[in-house]
Image 1 (spheres, rainbow, N blue to C red):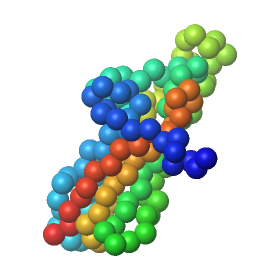
Image 2 (cartoon, helix red, strand yellow; image 1 turned 135 degrees about the horizontal axis):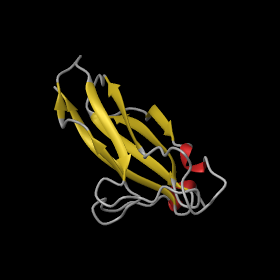
Image 3 (cartoon, rainbow, N blue to C red; image 1 turned 60 degrees about the horizontal axis):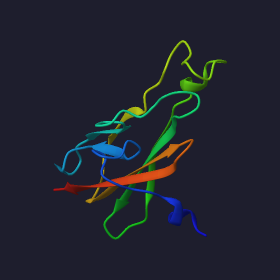
Image 4 (tube, rainbow, N blue to C red; image 1 turned 90 degrees about the vertical axis):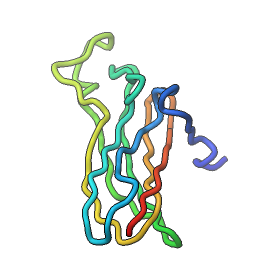
Length: 129
């Protein structure tokens, strides 16, 4: 079995584990773009020690190029408690931002990891003019 066979996807409006990518559809060459990735945009994901998103990772696949690792965001505050039924003193929701400067058009790919339901992915095309 390969890891790719275990990755799930779906419509984020109906599935709470699918990461979303909020980024412009087009940017001008040399300009920066703000990219927000999150899990739970439409349907909130539980954020408890027993069921949580551990991380979201963002990649960029340029047209005719190799995948680049852009950013990885880890969410650890959900484990800050000894009581497994209630959260600790602070929670970190799985939502993060990064500014990118793509040199050419390509596809942003976000992956998230739920401690109970495994790997999930989504993608978004971005055009560089």
